[in-house]
Length: 144
Figure (cartoon, rainbow, N blue to C red):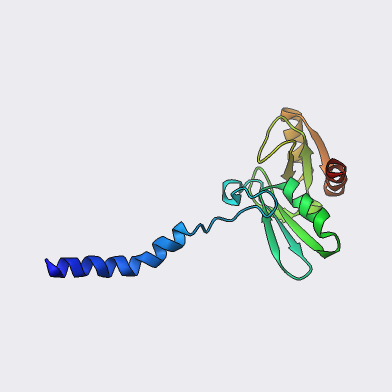
């Protein structure tokens, strides 16, 4: 009986750190709104500043918000293509604004790596296809 009890405590002591780290919430939260980024891999957006720091956001809107907040500190961003979940240079992407589909939050920008998929999506679900620069201008007006 003592051996079983000793074995139980041995297992408990060595497994406790992994249990605690899982419970500690290794949840990656959007730096802007606090949403759980792991729930939105199809809209994930990562901003990099000139000092090399990376900030994960739940989607394009929060990413654009960081771009506007960081101003001169902003270096680059990677968006996720809605259809493939592949990351791409956000400045080279195309965005559907105000479609009937809400991915992470409304009014919504949905990112696409190429214009063909963005146009097909907009044809089926509505919305306006815009470039990165246009999306940034739209969002600046929304924030003013």
